[in-house]
Image 1 (tube, helix red, strand yellow):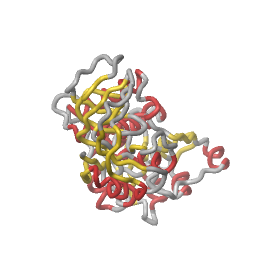
Image 2 (tube, rainbow, N blue to C red):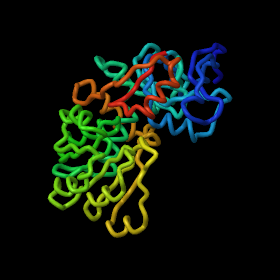
Image 3 (tube, helix red, strand yellow):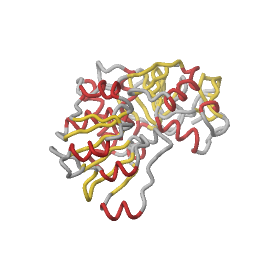
Image 4 (tube, helix red, strand yellow):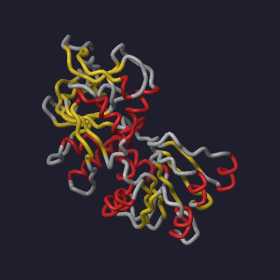
Length: 327
């Protein structure tokens, strides 16, 4: 189904690149597929995936609208959509298009926002908390008493992993850039906190588990040195790569993988959100947020016309939690 022939304001790019590739202006309203929900956007979550797509993903339109996740109200419905009505409060995910006044997402990746849940918080839940859930449960097989190391514990996925790991009964150690940031995350459930710039971090990692090593690592892409990581895990440990917050990502060779029996996997819920299991995971996370069981700090709110600044802040400012934009 074609768009309605109107124009909307959006942040878009004409070619791949850095934050300065983004423009703000008018674009055609999004086409609405039969199975899609059109959302009148109120809050846009600026995700790490947005940075990756802006650099690497193929452009699908001449004016390629950035962004993957936003919350708002239902504006219109495709002919095959069921379970939603115009005016419903929703949050949606798609692999492009969220940095706009109107955002189309397939109904399998759209969720009702529970009553009482703020739309700003709802906007940041699906990808961030869903990915943390995948790291801990689907991949990490977390269980009570397991020693879990969360690199980048003050980044979005890290903050989510701390809360979900605590709920699962794991013993949690978190790393971050600076003691002041660690002090902010500690109340959410960390047992131990380490500044990953510290010279004694490898020793401390060994001491925390009494030399046994961590069972599971969740890494938001902090750039922590490979030797410190390998020294801190037990044989047979699992290592979830859940982000690329730093260009200095560790490079694992065959020796490290084989000698430690280390299982390393890149984790995101993005490709499973539309499945019954993935959709149910996100639905329960939204309900948990509505009950006050999980939270996500919003470090900064930008206007959509400031999309370039918002992307630059996410890449260079090491935000504590998430960044949102408003049209």
